[in-house]
Amino acid sequence: MQVSVETTSQIERRITIQVPAGEIDEAVSARLKDTAKNVRLNGFRQGRVPMAVVRQRYGDSVRNEVVGEVMRERYVRAITEEGLNPAGYPQIEPKVNQAGKDLEFVALMEIYPQIELASIEGTEVERPVVSVSDADVDEMIDTLRKQNAGWEEVDAAAADGDQVTIDFQGFLGDEAFEGGSAEGHALVIGSNSFIPGFEEQLIGAKAGEEKTISVTFPGDYQAEHLAGKEATFKVTVHKVSAQKLPEVDAAFIERFGVEGGDEAKFRAEIQKNMTREAAQAVDNRVKQQVLDALKNANEIAVPSALVQQETDGMKRQAAQQFGLGEDFDVSQLPNELFEEQAKGRVQVGLLLAEVIKANELDADDDAIKAKVAELAEQYQDPSEVIDYYMGNEQLKTQVKSAILEEKAVEKLLEQTNVKDVEMSYQQALAAAQQQSDQDEGVEEEGEQANA
Image (cartoon, rainbow, N blue to C red; front, side, top):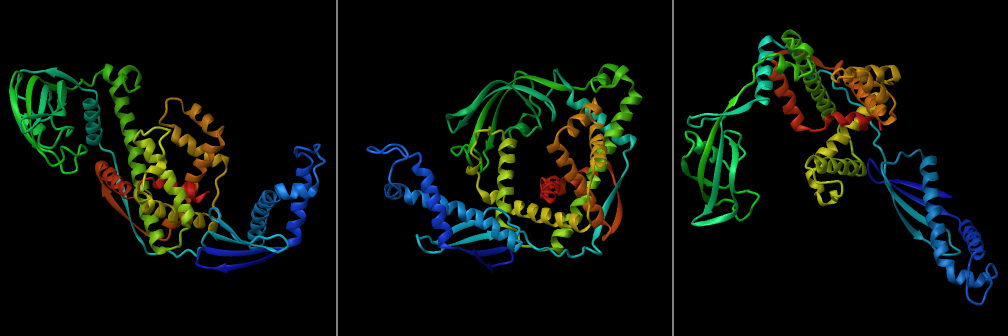
């Protein structure tokens, strides 16, 4: 076998492989002899068909089978001998494939890039310093009260935040349009669940009142026949209800798993959860700054096959997120929606893998179990969660990837200048969410790094 490798770009290789004609012909003859043993043709007993007839009838198909197998086998042998690390599947094309001539084929492939990590020395990293105050706990309790609020009918004009029960019918000019009517609909003013401008015009309305509301549908409205159109709605208000917040009593507290309804324990548990959430927000904010610096300092060629794999994964996630069903064909989603973000994820994953390799980072079962125990604290039965994770190799691998990512970020953080910045609980969460919106799914980069 003769092999020549041509470098066509940083990550692309063109491999030309030649296999002696004798090897191919010998393999084809052997396959035809095996085929002849089982051939059934009219006028011949099984196993007695002349080889000339077998070759004439099956020679081409057998040769194609053999050549296909040989090309795959020799490709694997060639990249092993040449020390090439393929990223994805190659494109294999035969150039010479004739009986009596040496087989020649070309394999076009991408390889993982050779990475020489550039330092992020001197990068400024902002690290939030957050403490959860009593006022933060009070605000969280108010949020929980609102989430568990009921509605109480009132004899008053509707205000922002009230719920109105209405009948309505929509018109374009004098004609009612399909889908523009409902009876007994409960609408919370300020929820922004209706067309812009609709809810605001119900402020001040009372039970028994009829109103005519004028609105303009947004230009990008999902129903094309309504997009950008002016419409009027005839609305009848049947009931106005104000939000009734539950008292913070034992019954309310017990809803959240605090036995006995002890308020001090309830507040302590809330503060503990908020502190953990704040710590996660801080970690995510610091991590994203480090990963952005790593990516900016190391522009690398990214194999298109890996980008496509990541794009396909993001499509599946999007389909699940929007409830499109397991049978939905994700190929209907255009690659352009995901490719840029997918490329960034792959780039960071490759760089993190190099950081992990260069620093010989690892995580044993004890480290994995400790991490799982940390994650399990938020569940009612932590020991059950730990046993479940530790008994599942796939989940253990995911946790190991997360640990290695944390260790890699810690190593990179040593190269940076960290500036502590005081932030409130809400500011820290808002900052982390802003970065998360810029690059959703950054938590998966660790899995790529350990792939």
